Length: 526
Image (cartoon, rainbow, N blue to C red; front, side):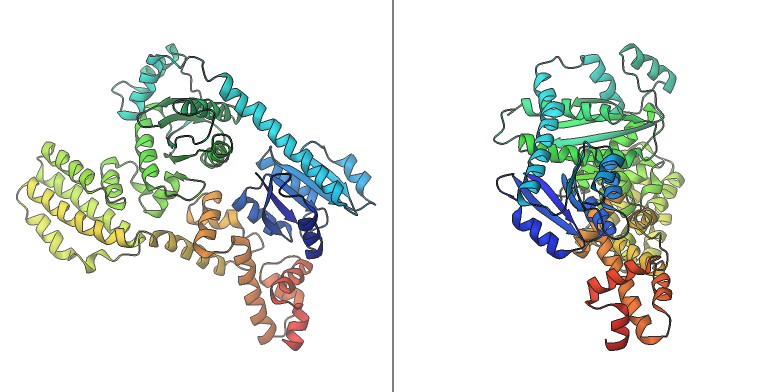
């Protein structure tokens, strides 16, 4: 089933299109509607439609410009642009067709359904040619040699004893060439296919080929290998900017395709970016932690950049041991936490170094608790804990103290785990209120301010607030506008500018859409 988005500021036109489109016959479903380009951009990030139907004359930017912007982000998107008779020929000559189909008004039921049938046919053909056929054709091809898989597997599991130059030389001999400066590990847990021709062990192999092809087509260098229990591990290498966000978006697209073709899916964890293959093991640990953190929200992909921000532990990446302990507390892995501590204290006999590490860990756990909305020292007496730490005579005594502290904080954090997300949304809302007058305020600027990727923040905001980011921003601005209209004598265009709408016509459009009357009517009669 293909997802469709309608964009038109005329509700009657949207009602007409909904009524005449043959949804069932064409295997279509309506996922969202928008009346202007800004709302459409917001919903596009949230719903990822495969077909967009837009009028050319919508508020802010034209439907053609909006279509081009969407296609730059998803080159498989099909767009149907509806335009008036007067400018149909001009638009046809000024745009490169292919992904964009043009229909002139008035639109008949036959025209729109034929255009949609063409769009679905193109999507089906692209998927079959570019992905399904490749997965099937390569299903029986030989796997990479055991030596190549062992080499990459060792990079995931251990800090290499050899230096970067020697490791690179060995990889080159095995035709494992990764020439770019950025590396990250991705760990994927695959579901078993249900009701699919590629069943059993065949599905992971087919999906692996699909993943490798998609990464290569999008400019990544990569090597993927199988682990245990339907786990795929992927080394990814790139040079371009925003590679982490592009990787996250690509995996989201692959998740949709895996569900479409194989009636199956996956959960993915993306590790942090490192600048050397000898540091890949740290990114692999972060990817594994991100995989554990992931929940069942679709797309089920979690980046360590997001997890690290929510646990406030991203600054600890260079202190791998303390970061690992902190992540154990965050994810309620008591046995792992205990094992890490016991291994450390079994080999570390310098009491002062033990105390120094313990103080750093207590500080990190304190920060972790606060980020989860928990005040730890109301539960554990901090001065008493520190005094006991410095009075301890043996490393074993310090180990037991940290075990007791960690166990207690895990119980508290587990009960308040969801509050970390709420806190980030709270910070975002504060930033929005403080920058309402900025016309450049957007999903990108807010997500960047709180340290989350645009895609993840868009989904998180909608999940937590039950409303899209753009709708929330408009409601906040209109609430301020109503106050200014009733309490002052500023002109309408002055209020528009003060609340961040550089275009007074668009301010009038949004105000009437939300309040039901124009700003002037509200001032005089509201």
